[in-house]
Length: 447
Image 1 (tube, rainbow, N blue to C red):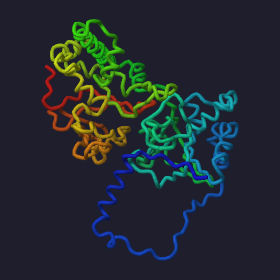
Image 2 (image 1 turned 90 degrees about the vertical axis):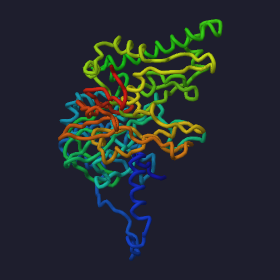
Image 3 (image 1 turned 60 degrees about the vertical axis):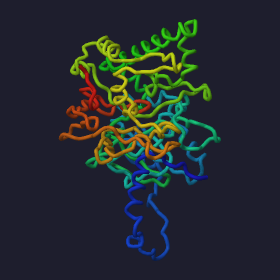
């Protein structure tokens, strides 16, 4: 049976491939001498299995106990004798930081231990030579059956629009350290096994339990950001229903309105939480992305001292209405533009193909080590799909660094770069990066 392949972040692979094609396409023979001799199969030289490697390390006793007590070995063997698995093995000290000890493992059921081990494991062999400064996404073995994500893997029948959700890890290297989800977990220590390999981690990696919106609510620093969008959405629907009532002769419900105009306004929750899909009633669709969240203090620096100030700004400058001539919602609130840059990569400004709509969304899950001008400043946020290539949407942000401080701004904007005061708050559907100021596009007036 074929090994399960490692799921690599799609956009980075495409960029590497494109770069290689550019280098070699013109005069390929000058750089590609004839192959001499026979191809030698790759051999990792390992002599021990994963369990044996864990056993020889005195600092992984707790994880080894979980490995031995779980049914992970049977799960791997069920995939075939040549199946390989790579394990991110936390040390005893790392697990202790997370409140997990040998006594904890003793009390866990086999099912709980299986999920515990699967979160830290992924199919395939990933040696350290494949890692670099930018994140490489791998899907863990652990599935969350509550969620689905955009369809890429084509492992189910044709016509399916979404894939099952598996917890993900984003791996990279920096200054000799292994990064997982943007944060260092200690010095890079990798050992190959006959059935895969292990990376030792001196710091714990927690399984995310909240969506982006849940995490923002729980944090407490983002009340203005969340509530102003929630209340703006309520105001939008109230305005629509008020305008429609005298035309249609009755006041319809919000649900009925959305049945006629499903794309009238993207709900404030879209992209932050899981959305129901009638095609998959037991699983909710999840958008994977990074969010640039401004703190309440960021709004105050911009002159908004309360949520009501933001709503008043919307009411004064907005033109939301139901158009009697075309029988459709029209207009927007001014803060919709700012919020699109903070949570949807400014796609509100993307050019839309008049025949096919917006180009396909590209990957936007980027951790702090990926927020690099070399990687991202010419990156396409939307490209491909049915839309013609001239309607691809290029990165609207210019990322920069001031010493160790990550900064960003909207390209061509008059404002100075905005500081990221915290990065890599991990959630089920991507990282949150915290900003100390609002992102303001060129020509946008806050006063």
